[in-house]
Image (cartoon, rainbow over all chains, first blue to last red):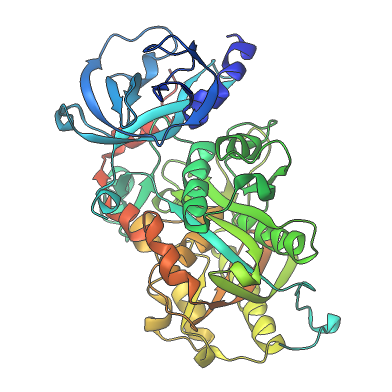
Length: 136
Length: 357
Protein backbone atom coordinates (compact mmCIF):
# COMPACT_ATOMS: atom_id res chain seq x y z
CA UNK A 1 0.00 0.00 0.00
CA UNK A 2 1.31 3.43 -0.90
CA UNK A 3 1.34 5.51 2.24
CA UNK A 4 1.94 8.78 0.39
CA UNK A 5 -1.02 8.26 -1.94
CA UNK A 6 -3.45 7.91 0.93
CA UNK A 7 -1.86 10.75 2.89
CA UNK A 8 -2.21 13.07 -0.09
CA UNK A 9 -5.97 12.48 -0.22
CA UNK A 10 -6.63 13.12 3.48
CA UNK A 11 -8.41 16.47 3.10
CA UNK A 12 -10.99 15.08 0.71
CA UNK A 13 -11.24 11.72 2.46
CA UNK A 14 -11.62 13.05 6.03
CA UNK A 15 -13.54 16.25 5.47
CA UNK A 16 -14.98 16.16 1.94
CA UNK A 17 -12.87 19.11 0.89
CA UNK A 18 -13.50 19.88 -2.77
CA UNK A 19 -13.38 23.06 -4.80
CA UNK A 20 -15.68 25.81 -5.94
CA UNK A 21 -15.58 27.69 -9.24
CA UNK A 22 -15.08 31.45 -8.82
CA UNK A 23 -16.77 32.32 -12.09
CA UNK A 24 -19.92 30.15 -12.10
CA UNK A 25 -20.14 28.92 -8.48
CA UNK A 26 -20.27 25.20 -9.27
CA UNK A 27 -18.97 22.95 -6.52
CA UNK A 28 -16.53 20.19 -7.46
CA UNK A 29 -15.78 16.92 -5.77
CA UNK A 30 -13.23 15.46 -5.98
CA UNK A 31 -11.12 18.60 -6.55
CA UNK A 32 -10.08 18.95 -10.20
CA UNK A 33 -8.76 22.56 -10.34
CA UNK A 34 -10.81 23.21 -13.50
CA UNK A 35 -14.57 23.83 -13.51
CA UNK A 36 -16.53 21.07 -15.21
CA UNK A 37 -19.21 23.55 -16.31
CA UNK A 38 -17.39 26.65 -17.55
CA UNK A 39 -13.81 25.36 -17.76
CA UNK A 40 -12.52 28.27 -15.67
CA UNK A 41 -9.84 27.62 -13.05
CA UNK A 42 -11.50 26.36 -9.84
CA UNK A 43 -9.02 26.16 -7.00
CA UNK A 44 -10.92 27.75 -4.12
CA UNK A 45 -11.29 25.04 -1.47
CA UNK A 46 -14.80 24.20 -0.34
CA UNK A 47 -15.79 21.83 2.48
CA UNK A 48 -18.99 19.98 1.62
CA UNK A 49 -21.71 19.62 4.26
CA UNK A 50 -21.69 15.84 3.86
CA UNK A 51 -25.46 15.75 3.37
CA UNK A 52 -26.99 14.18 0.30
CA UNK A 53 -29.19 11.38 -0.97
CA UNK A 54 -28.78 7.99 -2.58
CA UNK A 55 -28.79 8.36 -6.38
CA UNK A 56 -28.19 4.67 -7.05
CA UNK A 57 -26.73 1.73 -5.17
CA UNK A 58 -25.58 -1.86 -5.34
CA UNK A 59 -24.44 -4.59 -2.97
CA UNK A 60 -20.97 -6.09 -3.26
CA UNK A 61 -20.64 -9.81 -2.53
CA UNK A 62 -17.43 -10.49 -4.44
CA UNK A 63 -15.08 -7.81 -3.19
CA UNK A 64 -11.76 -6.58 -4.59
CA UNK A 65 -8.54 -7.28 -2.68
CA UNK A 66 -8.43 -5.46 0.64
CA UNK A 67 -12.19 -5.40 1.12
CA UNK A 68 -12.95 -9.16 1.36
CA UNK A 69 -13.52 -9.09 5.11
CA UNK A 70 -16.38 -6.60 4.83
CA UNK A 71 -18.70 -8.46 2.44
CA UNK A 72 -21.52 -8.04 1.86
CA UNK A 73 -21.31 -4.26 1.76
CA UNK A 74 -23.07 -1.56 -0.20
CA UNK A 75 -21.67 0.99 -2.62
CA UNK A 76 -23.69 3.95 -3.81
CA UNK A 77 -23.65 7.02 -5.94
CA UNK A 78 -24.45 9.84 -3.54
CA UNK A 79 -25.94 13.08 -4.85
CA UNK A 80 -24.46 15.70 -2.52
CA UNK A 81 -26.74 18.60 -1.67
CA UNK A 82 -24.28 20.95 -3.41
CA UNK A 83 -24.63 18.94 -6.63
CA UNK A 84 -21.74 16.55 -7.29
CA UNK A 85 -22.16 12.79 -7.46
CA UNK A 86 -19.77 10.85 -5.24
CA UNK A 87 -19.09 7.13 -5.22
CA UNK A 88 -18.82 5.80 -1.70
CA UNK A 89 -19.61 2.88 0.54
CA UNK A 90 -22.80 2.95 2.56
CA UNK A 91 -22.47 1.96 6.20
CA UNK A 92 -24.77 1.32 9.17
CA UNK A 93 -27.36 0.02 6.71
CA UNK A 94 -28.91 -3.31 5.76
CA UNK A 95 -29.21 -3.94 2.01
CA UNK A 96 -32.99 -4.18 2.42
CA UNK A 97 -33.18 -0.64 3.87
CA UNK A 98 -31.61 1.25 0.95
CA UNK A 99 -33.85 3.16 -1.45
CA UNK A 100 -33.11 5.71 -4.13
CA UNK A 101 -33.63 9.19 -2.69
CA UNK A 102 -32.82 8.14 0.89
CA UNK A 103 -31.23 11.03 2.85
CA UNK A 104 -27.68 10.16 3.91
CA UNK A 105 -24.87 11.89 5.79
CA UNK A 106 -21.10 11.58 5.61
CA UNK A 107 -19.23 9.77 8.35
CA UNK A 108 -15.54 8.96 8.65
CA UNK A 109 -14.87 5.23 8.82
CA UNK A 110 -12.14 2.70 8.20
CA UNK A 111 -11.91 2.12 4.45
CA UNK A 112 -9.38 -0.69 4.59
CA UNK A 113 -6.51 -2.09 6.59
CA UNK A 114 -3.25 -3.24 5.09
CA UNK A 115 -3.00 -6.60 6.86
CA UNK A 116 -2.16 -6.91 10.56
CA UNK A 117 0.87 -4.65 10.42
CA UNK A 118 0.15 -2.09 7.72
CA UNK A 119 -1.56 1.26 7.93
CA UNK A 120 -5.26 1.80 8.52
CA UNK A 121 -6.89 3.95 5.85
CA UNK A 122 -9.77 6.20 6.94
CA UNK A 123 -12.20 8.08 4.77
CA UNK A 124 -15.76 9.02 3.97
CA UNK A 125 -18.71 6.69 3.85
CA UNK A 126 -22.39 7.58 4.00
CA UNK A 127 -25.05 6.34 6.38
CA UNK A 128 -28.80 6.89 6.59
CA UNK A 129 -29.29 10.35 8.15
CA UNK A 130 -30.05 9.93 11.82
CA UNK A 131 -33.76 10.75 12.19
CA UNK A 132 -33.51 12.99 15.22
CA UNK A 133 -31.49 15.51 13.23
CA UNK A 134 -33.47 15.39 10.02
CA UNK A 135 -36.61 16.10 12.07
CA UNK A 136 -35.17 19.42 13.30
CA UNK B 1 -15.56 30.28 44.97
CA UNK B 2 -13.33 28.91 47.69
CA UNK B 3 -9.78 30.17 48.11
CA UNK B 4 -7.01 28.03 46.67
CA UNK B 5 -5.86 25.54 49.28
CA UNK B 6 -3.29 23.02 48.06
CA UNK B 7 -3.60 20.85 51.15
CA UNK B 8 -7.14 19.73 50.33
CA UNK B 9 -6.15 18.50 46.87
CA UNK B 10 -8.65 20.64 44.98
CA UNK B 11 -7.49 21.47 41.44
CA UNK B 12 -8.77 24.78 40.11
CA UNK B 13 -7.05 26.91 37.47
CA UNK B 14 -6.33 30.63 37.90
CA UNK B 15 -8.61 31.50 35.01
CA UNK B 16 -12.20 30.16 35.24
CA UNK B 17 -13.02 27.56 32.58
CA UNK B 18 -15.89 25.39 31.49
CA UNK B 19 -17.29 23.05 28.88
CA UNK B 20 -17.99 24.97 25.65
CA UNK B 21 -19.04 21.93 23.61
CA UNK B 22 -19.83 18.26 24.10
CA UNK B 23 -20.65 15.34 21.87
CA UNK B 24 -21.42 11.66 22.28
CA UNK B 25 -21.12 8.63 20.07
CA UNK B 26 -22.62 5.17 20.42
CA UNK B 27 -22.35 2.69 17.55
CA UNK B 28 -25.48 1.14 16.13
CA UNK B 29 -25.14 -2.50 17.16
CA UNK B 30 -26.32 -4.08 20.44
CA UNK B 31 -25.74 -7.56 21.80
CA UNK B 32 -28.09 -8.51 24.66
CA UNK B 33 -26.38 -9.90 27.76
CA UNK B 34 -28.87 -12.77 27.56
CA UNK B 35 -27.34 -13.74 24.19
CA UNK B 36 -23.86 -13.90 25.75
CA UNK B 37 -25.27 -15.91 28.65
CA UNK B 38 -26.92 -18.28 26.15
CA UNK B 39 -23.49 -18.94 24.67
CA UNK B 40 -21.55 -19.57 27.88
CA UNK B 41 -23.97 -20.59 30.64
CA UNK B 42 -26.88 -22.02 28.66
CA UNK B 43 -28.79 -18.91 29.66
CA UNK B 44 -28.77 -19.87 33.34
CA UNK B 45 -26.39 -17.18 34.62
CA UNK B 46 -27.46 -13.79 35.95
CA UNK B 47 -26.53 -10.85 33.73
CA UNK B 48 -25.12 -7.50 34.91
CA UNK B 49 -26.81 -5.32 32.28
CA UNK B 50 -29.49 -5.58 29.58
CA UNK B 51 -27.27 -5.14 26.53
CA UNK B 52 -24.09 -3.50 25.31
CA UNK B 53 -23.12 -1.40 22.29
CA UNK B 54 -20.82 -2.98 19.70
CA UNK B 55 -18.83 -1.16 17.02
CA UNK B 56 -19.31 -2.09 13.36
CA UNK B 57 -16.64 -3.60 11.12
CA UNK B 58 -15.49 -0.21 9.89
CA UNK B 59 -15.42 1.54 13.27
CA UNK B 60 -12.63 2.04 15.78
CA UNK B 61 -11.65 4.57 18.42
CA UNK B 62 -10.44 7.00 15.74
CA UNK B 63 -13.69 7.01 13.75
CA UNK B 64 -15.85 7.12 16.86
CA UNK B 65 -13.79 9.94 18.36
CA UNK B 66 -14.14 11.90 15.13
CA UNK B 67 -17.93 11.71 15.28
CA UNK B 68 -18.08 12.68 18.97
CA UNK B 69 -15.63 15.54 18.31
CA UNK B 70 -17.73 16.77 15.38
CA UNK B 71 -20.78 16.82 17.64
CA UNK B 72 -18.85 18.82 20.24
CA UNK B 73 -17.80 21.27 17.52
CA UNK B 74 -21.40 21.61 16.28
CA UNK B 75 -22.48 22.60 19.77
CA UNK B 76 -19.51 24.91 20.42
CA UNK B 77 -19.64 26.71 17.04
CA UNK B 78 -15.97 27.71 17.26
CA UNK B 79 -13.18 27.86 14.71
CA UNK B 80 -11.27 24.55 14.95
CA UNK B 81 -8.06 26.46 14.26
CA UNK B 82 -8.34 27.93 17.77
CA UNK B 83 -8.00 24.48 19.39
CA UNK B 84 -4.55 23.97 20.93
CA UNK B 85 -4.92 20.38 22.14
CA UNK B 86 -6.66 17.27 20.85
CA UNK B 87 -6.37 14.49 23.39
CA UNK B 88 -7.91 11.04 23.10
CA UNK B 89 -8.09 8.78 26.15
CA UNK B 90 -8.66 5.09 25.40
CA UNK B 91 -7.46 1.58 26.05
CA UNK B 92 -8.27 0.52 22.50
CA UNK B 93 -6.27 2.89 20.31
CA UNK B 94 -6.15 1.43 16.77
CA UNK B 95 -2.37 1.64 16.61
CA UNK B 96 0.11 0.65 19.33
CA UNK B 97 2.40 3.40 18.02
CA UNK B 98 0.81 6.22 15.96
CA UNK B 99 -1.51 8.69 17.65
CA UNK B 100 -5.28 8.45 17.32
CA UNK B 101 -5.40 12.13 18.22
CA UNK B 102 -3.69 13.31 15.02
CA UNK B 103 -6.36 11.54 12.95
CA UNK B 104 -9.09 13.25 14.96
CA UNK B 105 -7.33 16.64 14.81
CA UNK B 106 -6.98 16.33 11.02
CA UNK B 107 -10.63 15.33 10.57
CA UNK B 108 -12.02 18.27 12.54
CA UNK B 109 -9.67 20.79 10.91
CA UNK B 110 -7.59 21.57 14.01
CA UNK B 111 -4.19 20.91 12.41
CA UNK B 112 -1.40 21.98 12.37
CA UNK B 113 -1.27 24.53 15.23
CA UNK B 114 -2.25 22.09 17.96
CA UNK B 115 -0.95 19.71 20.56
CA UNK B 116 -2.09 16.11 20.06
CA UNK B 117 -1.64 13.09 22.29
CA UNK B 118 -3.20 9.79 23.30
CA UNK B 119 -3.88 9.14 26.96
CA UNK B 120 -4.02 5.86 28.84
CA UNK B 121 -5.26 5.09 32.35
CA UNK B 122 -7.70 2.20 31.92
CA UNK B 123 -11.22 3.68 32.13
CA UNK B 124 -10.28 7.19 33.29
CA UNK B 125 -8.01 8.15 30.38
CA UNK B 126 -10.69 10.54 29.11
CA UNK B 127 -11.25 12.42 32.35
CA UNK B 128 -7.56 12.89 32.99
CA UNK B 129 -7.37 14.43 29.50
CA UNK B 130 -10.24 16.67 30.64
CA UNK B 131 -8.27 17.78 33.68
CA UNK B 132 -5.23 18.53 31.55
CA UNK B 133 -7.46 20.47 29.15
CA UNK B 134 -8.79 22.50 32.09
CA UNK B 135 -5.19 23.34 33.00
CA UNK B 136 -4.28 24.17 29.40
CA UNK B 137 -7.16 26.61 29.09
CA UNK B 138 -7.02 27.78 32.70
CA UNK B 139 -3.38 28.75 32.41
CA UNK B 140 -4.01 30.79 29.29
CA UNK B 141 -1.87 28.50 27.10
CA UNK B 142 -4.92 27.63 25.02
CA UNK B 143 -8.30 29.14 24.29
CA UNK B 144 -9.78 25.70 23.62
CA UNK B 145 -8.64 22.15 24.33
CA UNK B 146 -10.49 19.00 23.27
CA UNK B 147 -10.59 15.93 25.51
CA UNK B 148 -12.11 12.65 24.37
CA UNK B 149 -12.84 9.39 26.20
CA UNK B 150 -13.62 6.59 23.75
CA UNK B 151 -13.28 2.83 23.67
CA UNK B 152 -14.06 -0.35 21.78
CA UNK B 153 -13.48 -2.35 24.93
CA UNK B 154 -12.09 -5.88 24.94
CA UNK B 155 -13.73 -8.75 26.83
CA UNK B 156 -12.36 -12.28 26.78
CA UNK B 157 -14.96 -14.72 25.38
CA UNK B 158 -16.79 -16.30 28.30
CA UNK B 159 -15.31 -13.91 30.90
CA UNK B 160 -17.50 -11.84 33.22
CA UNK B 161 -16.35 -8.69 31.40
CA UNK B 162 -17.65 -9.93 28.06
CA UNK B 163 -21.18 -9.03 29.18
CA UNK B 164 -20.28 -5.38 29.68
CA UNK B 165 -17.17 -4.41 27.62
CA UNK B 166 -18.75 -2.02 25.12
CA UNK B 167 -18.07 0.62 22.47
CA UNK B 168 -18.81 4.34 22.73
CA UNK B 169 -17.72 7.55 24.38
CA UNK B 170 -17.78 11.31 24.34
CA UNK B 171 -15.84 14.45 23.48
CA UNK B 172 -15.67 17.42 25.85
CA UNK B 173 -14.34 20.75 24.57
CA UNK B 174 -12.92 22.96 27.32
CA UNK B 175 -12.83 26.73 26.92
CA UNK B 176 -13.19 30.07 28.77
CA UNK B 177 -15.92 30.27 31.41
CA UNK B 178 -17.61 33.20 29.63
CA UNK B 179 -18.41 30.95 26.64
CA UNK B 180 -19.27 27.86 28.64
CA UNK B 181 -22.35 25.68 28.60
CA UNK B 182 -21.14 24.24 31.89
CA UNK B 183 -18.82 25.88 34.44
CA UNK B 184 -16.14 23.76 36.07
CA UNK B 185 -15.75 24.81 39.69
CA UNK B 186 -12.92 22.40 40.40
CA UNK B 187 -11.68 18.85 40.17
CA UNK B 188 -9.85 16.37 42.34
CA UNK B 189 -7.87 13.18 41.64
CA UNK B 190 -7.51 10.18 43.94
CA UNK B 191 -4.85 7.66 42.85
CA UNK B 192 -3.15 4.60 44.38
CA UNK B 193 -1.28 1.59 42.99
CA UNK B 194 -4.08 -0.98 42.99
CA UNK B 195 -3.74 -3.87 40.51
CA UNK B 196 -7.41 -4.74 39.98
CA UNK B 197 -7.39 -4.95 36.16
CA UNK B 198 -4.71 -4.80 33.47
CA UNK B 199 -3.80 -5.85 29.97
CA UNK B 200 -0.20 -6.76 29.20
CA UNK B 201 1.52 -5.68 26.00
CA UNK B 202 0.45 -7.80 22.98
CA UNK B 203 -2.36 -9.46 24.97
CA UNK B 204 -5.74 -9.41 23.21
CA UNK B 205 -7.80 -9.39 26.40
CA UNK B 206 -7.47 -7.87 29.86
CA UNK B 207 -7.12 -9.77 33.13
CA UNK B 208 -8.78 -8.76 36.37
CA UNK B 209 -8.93 -9.55 40.08
CA UNK B 210 -12.58 -10.66 40.18
CA UNK B 211 -14.01 -9.55 43.53
CA UNK B 212 -10.90 -7.46 44.18
CA UNK B 213 -12.27 -4.97 41.63
CA UNK B 214 -14.97 -3.91 44.13
CA UNK B 215 -14.19 -2.55 47.60
CA UNK B 216 -10.40 -1.93 47.41
CA UNK B 217 -10.59 -0.68 43.84
CA UNK B 218 -13.79 0.91 42.49
CA UNK B 219 -15.45 1.92 45.74
CA UNK B 220 -12.35 3.12 47.58
CA UNK B 221 -11.34 5.43 44.73
CA UNK B 222 -14.75 6.63 43.58
CA UNK B 223 -15.96 7.37 47.09
CA UNK B 224 -12.57 8.77 48.10
CA UNK B 225 -12.52 11.20 45.18
CA UNK B 226 -16.17 12.21 45.53
CA UNK B 227 -15.95 12.83 49.28
CA UNK B 228 -12.70 14.78 49.04
CA UNK B 229 -14.06 17.00 46.25
CA UNK B 230 -17.35 17.65 48.01
CA UNK B 231 -15.48 18.54 51.21
CA UNK B 232 -13.13 20.87 49.32
CA UNK B 233 -15.97 22.76 47.62
CA UNK B 234 -18.12 22.52 50.77
CA UNK B 235 -21.09 20.76 49.14
CA UNK B 236 -23.21 17.71 49.94
CA UNK B 237 -25.26 15.38 47.75
CA UNK B 238 -28.34 17.60 48.13
CA UNK B 239 -26.49 20.52 46.49
CA UNK B 240 -26.29 18.58 43.21
CA UNK B 241 -29.18 18.06 40.83
CA UNK B 242 -27.26 15.31 38.97
CA UNK B 243 -24.49 12.81 39.63
CA UNK B 244 -22.66 10.52 37.23
CA UNK B 245 -20.11 7.83 37.99
CA UNK B 246 -17.96 5.39 36.08
CA UNK B 247 -20.23 2.53 35.07
CA UNK B 248 -18.57 -0.89 34.80
CA UNK B 249 -22.02 -2.43 35.33
CA UNK B 250 -25.33 -1.20 36.73
CA UNK B 251 -24.75 -2.19 40.34
CA UNK B 252 -21.45 -0.46 41.24
CA UNK B 253 -22.44 3.12 40.31
CA UNK B 254 -25.82 2.71 42.01
CA UNK B 255 -24.15 1.57 45.23
CA UNK B 256 -21.57 4.35 45.08
CA UNK B 257 -24.26 6.97 44.46
CA UNK B 258 -26.36 5.77 47.34
CA UNK B 259 -23.34 5.60 49.69
CA UNK B 260 -22.72 9.29 48.92
CA UNK B 261 -26.36 10.17 49.64
CA UNK B 262 -27.65 10.51 46.07
CA UNK B 263 -31.21 9.48 45.20
CA UNK B 264 -32.14 7.62 41.97
CA UNK B 265 -33.61 10.75 40.36
CA UNK B 266 -30.14 12.31 40.63
CA UNK B 267 -28.15 9.46 39.06
CA UNK B 268 -30.51 7.49 36.76
CA UNK B 269 -30.30 9.88 33.77
CA UNK B 270 -26.52 9.52 33.57
CA UNK B 271 -26.53 5.79 34.25
CA UNK B 272 -26.37 4.38 30.72
CA UNK B 273 -24.52 1.10 31.35
CA UNK B 274 -27.70 -1.05 31.56
CA UNK B 275 -28.46 -0.09 27.92
CA UNK B 276 -25.04 0.43 26.30
CA UNK B 277 -22.62 -1.40 28.61
CA UNK B 278 -19.32 -0.18 29.98
CA UNK B 279 -17.71 2.07 27.39
CA UNK B 280 -14.51 2.18 29.49
CA UNK B 281 -12.75 5.53 28.88
CA UNK B 282 -16.05 6.84 27.51
CA UNK B 283 -18.23 5.62 30.35
CA UNK B 284 -18.36 8.57 32.76
CA UNK B 285 -18.12 11.19 30.04
CA UNK B 286 -20.98 9.82 27.94
CA UNK B 287 -23.06 9.62 31.11
CA UNK B 288 -22.37 13.34 31.54
CA UNK B 289 -23.53 14.05 27.97
CA UNK B 290 -26.88 12.35 28.68
CA UNK B 291 -27.29 14.67 31.68
CA UNK B 292 -26.35 17.76 29.66
CA UNK B 293 -29.06 16.83 27.14
CA UNK B 294 -31.71 17.44 29.82
CA UNK B 295 -30.14 19.63 32.55
CA UNK B 296 -31.38 23.14 33.32
CA UNK B 297 -29.36 26.32 33.94
CA UNK B 298 -28.11 26.46 37.53
CA UNK B 299 -28.11 22.67 37.98
CA UNK B 300 -25.00 21.36 39.71
CA UNK B 301 -23.47 18.07 38.55
CA UNK B 302 -21.02 15.78 40.33
CA UNK B 303 -19.00 13.63 37.95
CA UNK B 304 -16.63 10.89 39.16
CA UNK B 305 -14.65 8.62 36.86
CA UNK B 306 -12.74 5.49 37.74
CA UNK B 307 -9.78 3.85 36.06
CA UNK B 308 -8.31 0.55 37.12
CA UNK B 309 -4.79 0.55 38.36
CA UNK B 310 -6.28 2.70 40.01
CA UNK B 311 -7.72 6.17 40.35
CA UNK B 312 -10.73 8.46 40.19
CA UNK B 313 -11.17 12.01 38.89
CA UNK B 314 -14.03 14.01 40.38
CA UNK B 315 -15.48 17.20 38.88
CA UNK B 316 -17.84 19.86 40.25
CA UNK B 317 -19.91 21.31 37.40
CA UNK B 318 -22.70 23.86 37.02
CA UNK B 319 -24.92 24.37 33.97
CA UNK B 320 -25.23 27.85 32.40
CA UNK B 321 -27.96 29.42 30.25
CA UNK B 322 -25.90 28.80 27.12
CA UNK B 323 -26.53 25.06 27.30
CA UNK B 324 -30.16 25.49 26.26
CA UNK B 325 -29.42 26.89 22.81
CA UNK B 326 -26.36 24.69 22.17
CA UNK B 327 -27.59 21.19 22.93
CA UNK B 328 -30.02 20.87 20.00
CA UNK B 329 -27.25 21.45 17.43
CA UNK B 330 -26.09 17.82 17.48
CA UNK B 331 -27.54 14.35 17.97
CA UNK B 332 -28.48 13.69 21.59
CA UNK B 333 -27.00 10.78 23.51
CA UNK B 334 -30.44 9.19 23.77
CA UNK B 335 -30.76 9.68 20.00
CA UNK B 336 -27.72 7.49 19.50
CA UNK B 337 -28.96 4.90 22.01
CA UNK B 338 -32.32 4.73 20.21
CA UNK B 339 -30.50 3.95 16.93
CA UNK B 340 -30.31 0.26 17.75
CA UNK B 341 -29.74 -2.90 15.71
CA UNK B 342 -29.62 -6.14 17.66
CA UNK B 343 -26.98 -8.70 16.70
CA UNK B 344 -26.39 -12.31 17.72
CA UNK B 345 -23.21 -13.79 19.17
CA UNK B 346 -21.95 -14.97 15.79
CA UNK B 347 -22.21 -11.49 14.28
CA UNK B 348 -20.65 -10.06 17.42
CA UNK B 349 -17.59 -12.33 17.09
CA UNK B 350 -17.18 -11.19 13.51
CA UNK B 351 -17.57 -7.47 14.25
CA UNK B 352 -15.19 -7.71 17.20
CA UNK B 353 -12.55 -9.52 15.13
CA UNK B 354 -12.65 -12.61 17.33
CA UNK B 355 -12.66 -14.86 14.25
CA UNK B 356 -9.12 -15.62 13.14
CA UNK B 357 -9.10 -16.12 9.37
